[in-house]
Length: 379
Image 1 (tube, rainbow, N blue to C red):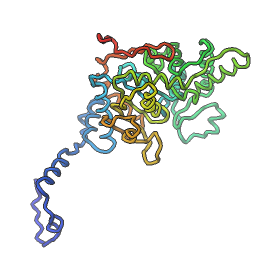
Image 2 (image 1 turned 90 degrees about the vertical axis):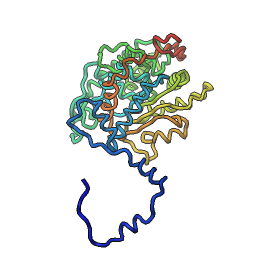
Image 3 (image 1 turned 60 degrees about the vertical axis):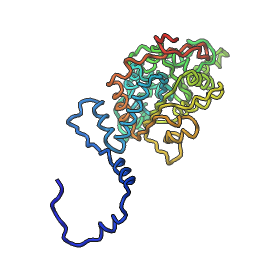
């Protein structure tokens, strides 16, 4: 109901401010721009992640961006061209409690390939061997933690003695393999096949044939275990295994080239984000212009104005040809322990992976002999 209060005082405010009358075209444009009201969230009506994120889509600021990321993810999964979805993982995700979310994304069939930091995969292995991440505090006495052989990841603790055991497991596992140069994808697939913990990311990826790349594997505790293996074999002048980083480039680029379309998900940024994007550029090595990712979204706390890759916008990636000019894309600047369960939970609760056929990768050493859709009569 409009107010009945009238102002009897003379004012020139209205006449001065509204002296310029809008044309009919301007009026129509104004009405269009003001046509979508913000809808306040009704918390009492929220009974699932789906209803919460759907409500976010009609709010503002980062809530709306979370909603847009979920919308882009849904578009990826329902595209009839069935794009290959590449998931990039960086940051303290396992320490933050996201291990099962990532594992469930693999099992739900909503990702097709993973590019991760070595630290995330190492901590997955650490937990697969029965060790724990435990609640700590960022205000800890770190000198005292060092004396007790406890390592701190912000507000989370890990047992340094168990880290040494896990390093040893990697060293011993490497010793069981045929001495040669491996891509991280081949090495991690073999490692995943030896893990028995059904909650493991690496185990589930190996089980479903999902390739996992870690282009900076050496820069992790897996790298420490492999260095130990290298040193022992080197002293005895025995053959040893190594990780071939350029073979990683070669293998991932073949996935790009053989895919009808590609879609990218970046959790944080770092090396995995750049690796997924550079594979688009490297497709020129095979004489292909893929046109860039058809879909992309990112969940990060990094911001664009420092000029770094992790916070760079997906529009900036267009200038490199890494993201298609007309790609559906979104970014939410929300820390992943909050944002990833919302976005992944949205598509999982909607069952968007249930009827989506998986991809079948057939590798012969460093050659991707075929990439086909399972149960596709055309293949």
